[in-house]
Image (cartoon, rainbow, N blue to C red):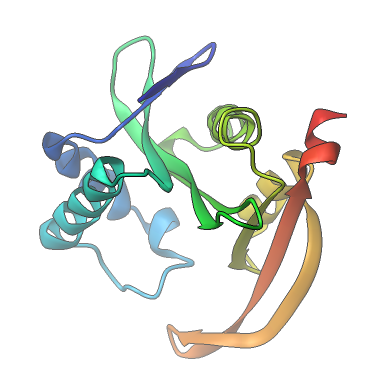
Length: 178
């Protein structure tokens, strides 16, 4: 599968992508809001294998795509919609981007493309996301996508020697199309 935007190509992962995934997952900015203290080659390989497996499932329910720059094909992240309830037409959204690419609008461009795909091609009614409440970049991205905060789970997750709130955001089909 492939989606193209002005600056990006979103495509299914291939096995060799693990190296690029590992390269950005060791960045301090990436690790700041993740439970892991560090990333490893093994975890990057596992992630790529997992999303490749999702792409092979029939019927396909999970679309986690590699984000690559159209100009040079370099992998800079991944984003996806993963159908969580086919009968309710609901999917979870997620995006991760190489911290060296932050602040360029690329996360929003990729997110817009995959969320639009979720509504237009997959027929979703509701697309939701959750993130660490202190992760202001992720919160701003959700809001830029027209998502509204639906809830805050106080001290929901413990890692890096503290409790973290999780926030839940969602956008409905009718809001996306308006």
